Amino acid sequence: MTAPRWTQALLWYLRELAGEAEYERYCAGHQRRHRLAPVPSQRDYQALRAHRAESVPRRGRAHAGAVL
Image 1 (tube, rainbow, N blue to C red):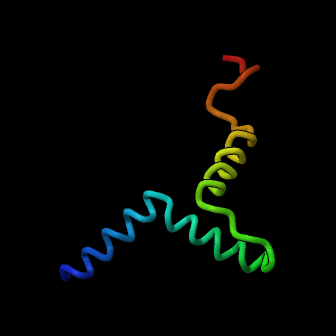
Image 2 (image 1 turned 30 degrees about the horizontal axis):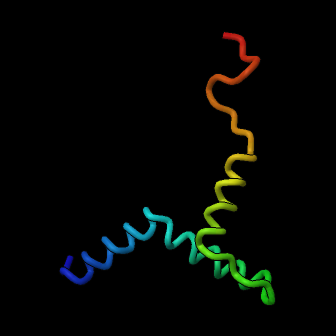
């Protein structure tokens, strides 16, 4: 692997890890679905994402009412 390709692969990985690419994919989808609506800022997107994650109940290995 050449140095430019290695650097490009590393940058892609870091962007995926940091969540920057996810925000860009969200913006692209948002613009396709809601052409006239403004795109939320990255801060608003992160707040919306955190709110959705907290509002969805998740079942862990042990949850309330489980018989052990």
